[in-house]
Length: 265
Image (cartoon, rainbow, N blue to C red):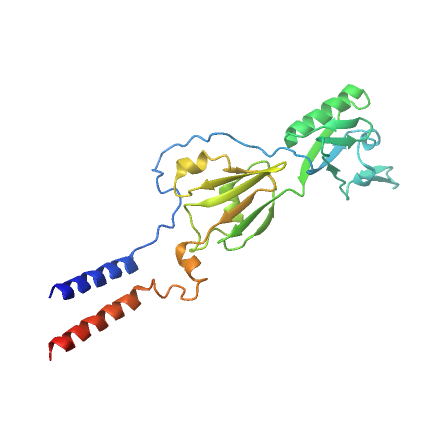
């Protein structure tokens, strides 16, 4: 009788485990109206190897032209006179010393600057030259990416199209996590020269998420979402067979039937 009660208890426990709901939500500790303070607001800054476009314009396009790379624009004759066209955008590459070679003004150190800081710096240098009184400088980052891998719906390489990109933005761009992705251990790897730093983040913990140095992504960051235990077991020979409550329930029922049959003799 005790053996039968033990087997019934095991069956009930397996049923309870089979019916339990996995924790798939984010921010599970966040209450309505609660305010979280971010540890820092990280805007993308230039690093050696980054590419950017810089376009200088003015009410006097002929003077502005000399401050643009030749392939940025070219003059064309028309019945209304000369005009500057900008159908093709050239790019500058930040060298290993953090510099770019700028027309007329020469070498400029831009590593560590944001887009707006580069624009202000270039504008001031043009004003200091005395060659142009009303420059307008437009700066855009080119070929800056982050990557998302693992258990997301659309893994891939995504362009950084604005100054601040958060980890949540990245996961949204990748179509969110699948039901097999671990929410409690998302990995972000970040390169800095010849060093690489790893950050692990629990998406269900809002304080940990918002205070992580990896909440704001940088260029070349890699986000990896690990598979949960069920997904990992699918790669083995038996897969999730042994973890299936139905298998153990059937086995327990068979054992009870054998016991009853033996005792009937």
